[in-house]
Length: 424
Image: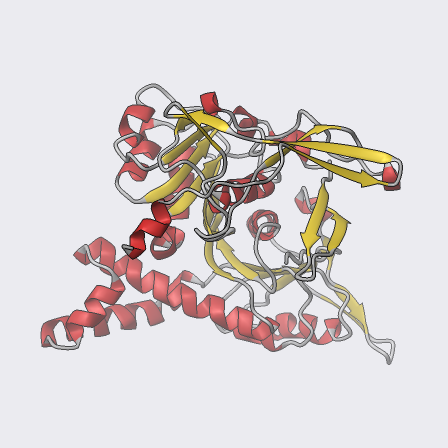
């Protein structure tokens, strides 16, 4: 067997055509999704890995009333309801990872409806995100340069129709999936040059605000076969006015408060908190001018997550300089520098410029999905020149964390979200 053949082998699933879930006296019925592509009936290509059969189910009947919560109901499906007509180009028709990346794009974009926004996702995390009043092409350009390295093979999800300028960005790079509410004339001719690109036209991406206040039944499967069910996360920070002024009272009764963010800082914090809803915890996000600069994901400690994001920012910034100026990656330059003095000098210059610019982190806003339990993570971020922080608040040492912001020169602003945004 040629090893690469495993990625081209379709998995025939034996899952039933319907799935029934009963919660007390309420009953939900899900229907299995298949598509006729290339004159053949196909379900999901495979699951997370090529040797895992998988099936996609759409909520077809039933509703929930438990907990006096507004639950999503049949007919509101987007990714689970995708049909052949919406698969403009199936490429190597989609597997689980392709659809879950698009779904997480939906999850984030439901909170970013007021401006054209673009996401590039990889392994169910955004590697670049941006929004811009200048349009989707500008947002996509900014999202791409947030992390050119990780964008390779990623999924693009946008909330406005794709135009020709954005199409050229897509055609010039390798992506696996593009999902948009619509495509302007000529766009498909350009992006279809990538024959294996999966292209989805999902009109609902242009009208996601209707979902933002409506929860879905979030089901987590345990390794022992059990289940945990929960109400899905709903972002409470929809406007800058929803942030809570950061203040704390010490045991001795003394009171401390943080500087309020400027209008620009507040907008960046608002954007970053929306993106945070789709990032694996522990996580932090550095943002500037409506675009992510660095995203730290999946760390076990908060300060380590900040340090990881800073390290990534330096790598991505250096790579951006090398690629734009010399049309090669940072890693190609490092390889050449090992045996060539001229390239070694070039690498030294790139690294010096990256350090001097602090990898673009100066003037950024930082959000954290959980509170800062100690001031260490804040101090590390402040040394990079950040200007604003948002986090849930409610830690025993909130006063110390606020003090770190107040001691910074210039003083760093801070607000609380009053809500944790863990995602496991």
